[in-house]
Image (cartoon, rainbow, N blue to C red; front, top):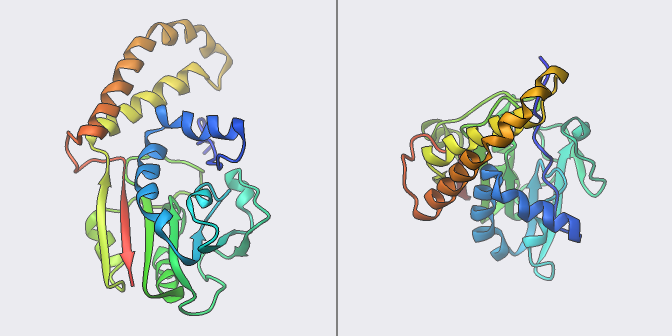
Length: 246
């Protein structure tokens, strides 16, 4: 099965164009927006050794205080299949984290677990390498299309997440957005997928999608308002954030 509309890789705002891409995409990419809103509340306070599991291009490393933290990123050897190329990382097999017990004070893992077949092994490894009293932040999608095909395996409910992170002394699970943001996200993907079709004959419909852009703008505005005011049902969110403590 081929992937008709692949996600844009998440890169750090280390240049002017990078800042435009990083912050500008949050107007339309509600998944990235809600992940960032949770990440920015947590990891700037990290101190000591910090591990980023499945780090990709290390998009959130810049939020760490460089004078108070030491960053370690790990990702799979063939991360280029996900459109990532980061030489400043430690490669691993996707399950066994190549560091000693209780090395890390902080941990980051964003939108990774859905791509790991043996997810429990990786979570147990996160627990092993975290220090007693350490804090980690993990994000996962709930409503996300089948992506990075075929390396997309799972979606998790809060009930399953409680079991998966059961070894930690604390695992606080919160929803990212509500069904309003979820629906808006689907409309955004639908609009852009048809504005940039993969089949040549579908280009004749581009004027139609351009004419429908006022609807898109209205939907996007409603989504952002829902995120600010937190209205809608939290039983069908964009995803979940898990704050764990060992």
